[in-house]
Structure formats: C-alpha cells, structure tokens
Image (cartoon, rainbow, N blue to C red; front, side, top):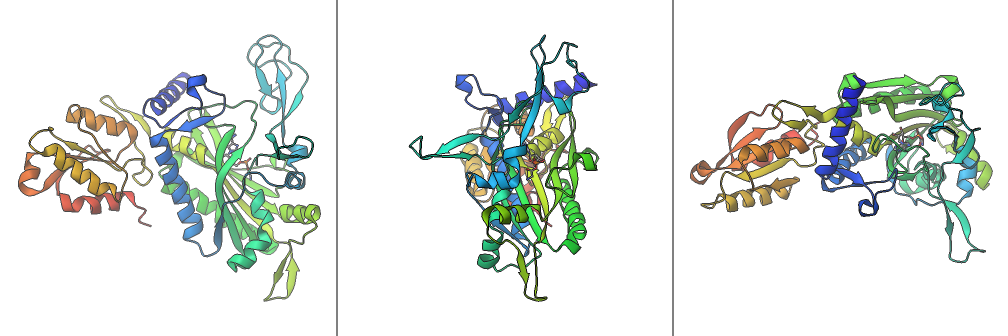
Length: 434
Ligand code: GAP
C-alpha cells in the first residue's frame, strides 16, 4: 500500500515536471534543495487558488482588508514575536548512515533507519539572516520573514485609521515566507521559500470563541469549494502540549497526502499575545479604543494561516487519477490552469484559422490554448493530463452552421454547440457561482 502511494506520488512529481507545473529551482546548475520554480501551468494554478482565496476572504467581506507588506522588517519584530529565541529545530545525525532527523519526529535514542548511534542534539535556527546596507560595520542584521503575519500586527493601528475599520475586523495578506528548513521534503510540501495566505482577525476577548468557530467553518468550506474531496480533509485540535508559544487554542486543517495526513492550514486563537508583545517592544500603544462603549482594551486575534504551495500540492494529489486509457487531473474547473483547448479537426480548408480565431476570442476572458498537432484523441489526452475541463473541436460542420464539438474532460461526453454559446458555457462552469 505504502509503495503504491509512493509510486503515485512519483508519477505526479514527474507529470508536474514534464508538463511544466513545478520543477526544481536552478535546474541547469543541478537544482537546489527545498527551492522550486512554478512553470506556466503551475503559475496559473497557483494564481487561481490565490485569487479565489483573496476573493472569498478579502473582497467579499466588509470586515477584512488586504495588505502587501515588506518581506524584511525591523529585526526587533522577531525579538518581540519570539522567533529570535524560539524558532529552531533540534536535530540529531546518525553516526552510521549519516541521515539527519528532527528529534521531535523520532522515538527513542537510536537511528530509525539503521538502528545506529545518534549524535547529541544540536539546534538549527530556521530564519534566514542577511545584512541591510552596504558597509559591513554599519549594516543592520535583518531576517527574511518566516511568516507573513507579523506586519499585520505592526499595522493594526495604522489600518484602523486609513481603512476606517472597527473591531471586529481582519487584515489579510498573501506573500512569500522563508524558513531554512533542515529537512525539506515531500516535493513542495516543506520548502525553504513558500507562499502563505494569512488573516489576522481582531475581536473582543468575549467573542474569541465565536469567531474561532466561525473562521474554522469558513476555512473548511473553502477547501471543499476549490475541489478538495471531503474525505481527504479533516480538522485536528492541538492538545495543550502541542500549542505554539503564542496560542491559546489551535486546530489544524489536515489533508490526506499520499505520504499521510499533514497540516495544510492552522487556525489559532493568538489571544492578545502579538499586540501586547509589539506594544512592549516598540513602546507604541496598540490597544483599541471602543468609541461606542468608551472602553480601551487589547483585542484578541484569531488567525487563519494557510500555505499556498501546500494547498496546490493537495489539489494536485486530489485531482490525479490514472484510468486505463488516460491520466487525468480532475481539477475543479474553477481552479484548472487552462479552461479550454481548441483544436481544428484537420489543418486545411480554413479549419485551423477558424479554430485560432475562436481560441483568440475566448482568450480575452479565459486561459485557453490552441493545439493543431496530432490526432484529436491525442490532443484530448494532452489536455486531460493537465486538467483542462473543455475540449473544443472545429470541423467541416463548423463551416456550415457555426457549431463546434464541446467535449467534457470528466465524462468525455461530446455535444454540438453554437460558437456564440461557448463563452457562456465555459463561464458557468469555471467562474465561481456562489
Ligand atoms: N503565522 C502562523 C504560521 O506561520 P505555521 O503553522 O508555521 O503557522 C502556516 O505555518 C502554514 O504555512 C502551514 O499550515 C503550511 O501550510 C505553510 N507552511 C509552513 N511551513 C512551510 C514550509 N516549510 N513549506 C511550505 N509550506 C509551509
């Protein structure tokens, strides 16, 4: 069973590379561990997921606003957040087989692979360090952010005045985070550079449980909306021993990857930890004055933190299916990188030009592709393998009555449709309807 799952994962990784979803960074130099490049299809897929997250969590809400903050911040931020002192992994090396393990991931004091003797544990800091400024003596030691959320706390006061929002309200952002992971693994699951989508939702402490439950339910629903199978998604509360230093309560949303159930998102009640810490370290008051009641207090914060790359990996694993005749990525049409492929039955008698015109017209609204090479069957298969929901074939009948064949990826059913009806049909399937 484990071997079957590993084979499946290997095939998916190979498909991602071959079809241009995701491949190792700096390939011509031999690649570099824990760093990945997203090719044309991967970039579209990622963008669709990111855009839907933004739509549902920012645009459609009148109580959440978005930000896009700098990756490098004042280094004091990481003292206040607790990262400078506490953000490290403890590692041991096997003296026989030389493999490296995180101490929190192994049982006992022997190598889990070969039973060999292990070194004493050593601590590895997970933040990337760099210098700000050109002159070594005067430059400031700074860090690439290991999470996107800290700047949302720093801007808590500023956002209230510029966006005229009142508690309860949230601040959201999508952006790159960096962690010098000592054991990057499982394709893009644990990388050293990745994208996070985070919301910090500020509320009165009396309402923190209500908002926690509300966000948990909404975030679960979002994964189902983008096509994750319900049986492969579960929520796992943290017990007291597992809680991060900043958290009062936490629930992980986990996906069943071929390599097991793993976290894709964390929902945390961070209480007033962050606003209080930044008040203490910066000397700037980050409390909230409630004009309606005349009360001043430091709000609690409910956090939703999801990895975009991990979500993309979950979607790829979820969509991948092998059938006797074909490999198909059954993406939800809403997030599929390409919405339709347009094919001329043959390239002569004006069919190629007509197919290109149809494709160019559709391209104004959707990501589409024209493919004129090989048998129609092969062209359908090529699109199935990258998850394109629709295939459109232009044939001799098109010249007579302006209809085309529309073929659906999942059912493989084909029907005739007027060219004028194509955009509406694709829109209905591929644009969020609720
Ligand atoms: N602000 C809270 C926070 O960063 P986290 O559990 O460390 O919490 C949140 O990270 C999410 O970010 C994870 O659920 C995961 O999806 C993603 N993530 C964390 N480390 C990652 C890594 N090394 N590679 C890819 N995604 C990662």
